[in-house]
Every structure is written in structure tokens, then in C-alpha cells.
Length: 234
Ligand SMILES: NC(=O)c1ccc[n+]([C@@H]2O[C@H](COP(=O)([O-])OP(=O)(O)OC[C@H]3O[C@@H](n4cnc5c(N)ncnc54)[C@H](OP(=O)(O)O)[C@@H]3O)[C@@H](O)[C@H]2O)c1
Image 1: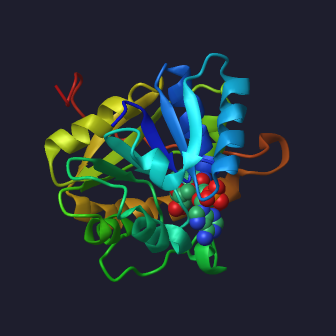
Image 2: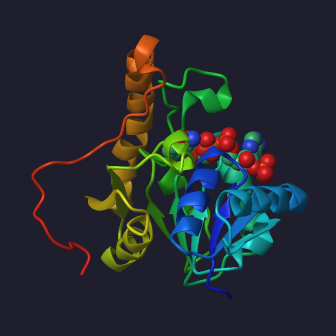
């Protein structure tokens, strides 16, 4: 297994934004897609924006074998199908960082509403579906793709991280904090993803109310106040 960060659904908005920012930080990326050619084109777009970026594009299963921490960024309607398709690729010891939000928009509903998920959240659905020995962390739900993709824009936001093992969350936190302007916040157990996934719909609702006229399009972020200074993850 390589040392890249595989991004499943990396041809999409969030995956592309994360790939750009991590590539800028010198992280090796494996962009995954259902279509290897589309993944290669997405990798090329990253290289154009970040000259010298260490990035390759592969079919999702091949990408998933490229590194120990796999990021999943697909629409909710594709969540279970994608996880089914990854069953043969994911190996015990790998960590899946799920960014998926069950927005109603995934089934033609409003982006400001979410769908009920039997397991409680997309992340818990993922936990039920990954092969034994693969653990799941949920993160990046409140980080907007548009802002990530605008490399001249600075970030100043928290990434809420949910997971059942502190060391797993710390790995995702370290990766998140390689992006300047992002602070990783320990949000609690994986079941807390039930709450955090809802925040995306809330932020879409806020963005729409502040995006108009001179303000242009607004991309809000989220910050938790009152936390102690210092490295929580040490
Ligand atoms: N966009 C944001 O700002 C943001 C922020 C936080 C969280 N999220 C969540 O992160 C996930 C990804 O968001 P996104 O905006 O990046 O989504 P997106 O651009 O619509 O899709 C991401 C990728 O998923 C893949 N995919 C696999 N199966 C699919 C299917 N059946 N239908 C459509 N696409 C499919 C596609 O890649 P291939 O066609 O190449 O396989 C697509 O490029 C979502 O769950 C979203 O709610 C998004």
C-alpha cells in the first residue's frame, strides 16, 4: 500500500477542493472515480492549479489501495453503492474518513433538508458497510468546496471530527490541519455525526440568505469558541 491520500469521488466538488489544498501542502493524492479516465483528467486539473502536485487519477478501487486513510466524498445517493464496490479494495487497518451528508438534494429534495438514515447518519451507515477491521471517522461536513477550490482565498474554519477512537480522529485531524486555516475539533463519537451531518444543510440555508447583491456568493464557515489553546491531538 502506498502513502497517498485516496479521495473516492475525488472528481467532484469537495474532493477536488480537498485535493487542491492537500496538494498545495505537499500531500500525495490518489483521485478516485468510477471512471479512470475522468480521474486522470481531474488529476491533471489539480496539477494545472498546483504545479508539481503529486497526484494521480485512478478507478475508485485502485485509488483506495493507494494509502491507509481513505477519504469518501460522494453524494448520498451513491454512498451505499460506492461502499459496496469498495468492499474488495478496503483492507483491515485502513481508515475511512466519510464526508458524506444525506442531503435531501441527493434525491431531488431541498439542499436545506436532510434524509433520515436508518443507522443514524451516513457515517454510521458506512461503518456498517466497510469490511471488518476498517474503521470510520466522519469529518469535513462544514467545509465548503467552493472556498477550498479558490486557492487565493484563505480559510479560517473548524473541521468537526467524529469517531470512536481518539487515535483515528487524530490521524484525520493531522491531515485536516495540513491545510492552513483549518483547525480540527474533536466533536465526539461516531454517532455524533448524526448532528454534524445536519450542519451542512444549516450552512447551505445560511449561505443562501447572505448571498445577494454586493455581497455576492457567501461561503460561511464554522468555528467553535471557548476551547483551550494548544494541540489537542498531541
Ligand atoms: N460540496 C461541498 O461543499 C460539500 C461540503 C461538505 C460535504 N459535502 C458532502 O460531500 C459529498 C460529496 O459532495 P460533492 O459536492 O463533491 O459531490 P459531487 O460533486 O456531486 O460528487 C462527487 C463525486 O461522486 C461521484 N459519484 C459516484 N456515484 C455517483 C452517482 N451515483 N451520482 C453522482 N455522482 C456520483 C462522482 O464521481 P465519478 O462520476 O467520477 O465517479 C462525483 O464527481 C456529498 O455527500 C456532500 O453532501 C459536500
